[in-house]
Image (tube, rainbow, N blue to C red; front, top):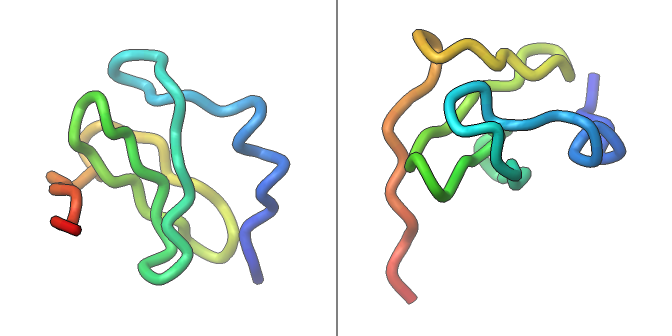
Length: 60
């Protein structure tokens, strides 16, 4: 099942309530403010702080 990008309009980071970005290659939602990556399982975002992984933006 694929992730519906329309969800990005209504979901927020559970830690800071900020914007999340979709990272298609790894199927994760990224909070750049908190440097957290939330998994997407079967098209469903898992927005639980204890399931998030530390995320670091790739250098250009």
